[in-house]
Amino acid sequence: MDVVAAKQIGAGLAAIALAGAGVGIGSVFASLVATIGRNPASRPHVFTLGMLGFALTEATGLFALLIAFLILFA
Image 1 (cartoon, rainbow, N blue to C red):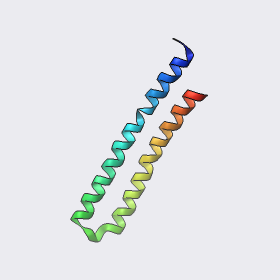
Image 2 (cartoon, rainbow, N blue to C red):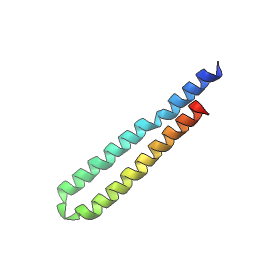
Image 3 (cartoon, helix red, strand yellow):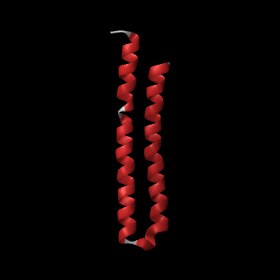
């Protein structure tokens, strides 16, 4: 196997984590909408926690993308 082919396979496998980040973000916002729908008075507190969950989930996706780029171009 060529080194370039191995890098491309490794980058593709590392990019699979981006699908997990997308599912996680969808889950965070689905729970956020359901919670605000049940109890609208709790919106300020729940919205803050939802944004924190979004940021942490997105950060893991960005780290996976960074690793994929490092494998591909380093």
